[in-house]
Length: 354
Image (tube, rainbow, N blue to C red; front, top):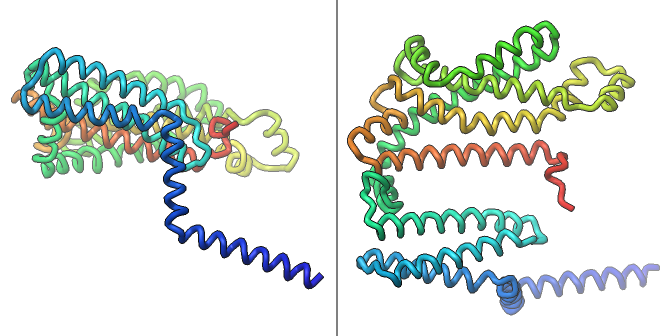
């Protein structure tokens, strides 16, 4: 028994030593890299990516030199078709590891977005579209790089103050109101129809009233965000609290669980997909509401103020710069909430893989 155990120990040590040698061997790493390259070639990704990159470089060089002719437009069509094929092949991938799946999921929107930006640049500059109507992405990028202090001040005024404050207050109030309405049938029959009616109020009518009540600074914009985010959270939370099945509720009753225990251990976990759905919807509604509210009165700072002022001066590149910052902020907020949802609701069937 000792000898057998010692033999197994020696065998395990030998295997570990072999693995360590292979990990330190540069040829092993080279072999792994070659294997990955061969896999990419078999999947047909390297050639379209190379052709699209070279074609994009030629198109941008032609734009700089002003060489826009039939050959230029033919190359635009070819690059678009190659990029389309590359995106389709990336979408069809089914990687085995989680890291590879994450990279593939990121690669598809990145390639698609870069293709759209390239087509935008080529069409606007190649057709000579006036920048007042539609500036090219290069002009928007240059404006962003040259106006970072202004963009940051507008972002801080609109997003960091009005949007975040209104989002937290609106979502929190909607969640608490849903818990109260769920507890009381009187509130469900009386308050919920009024809430549904108030959710249909137009923002262009609410914003001036909030400016009159709370002043021209960011609290009035936060109040508009509260109004816009309260009702989606209320309705979705109520729907989520009703999502738990009757069998699960009967099981909790057999355990003599009270209302609080049932709420914390059954109904709120079952409602999490609905709650996160409301949070994601409100992440975009809050930013839209704050920007629109700034059109009706604000200090000389803020995204909405800047858009309104610069469009009057025909500085459309600055308007698009503000739109880009707002889109990036909204997309990042939505993405962070989606990651949090995946962490909290990992048990949901939509996250299971076959």
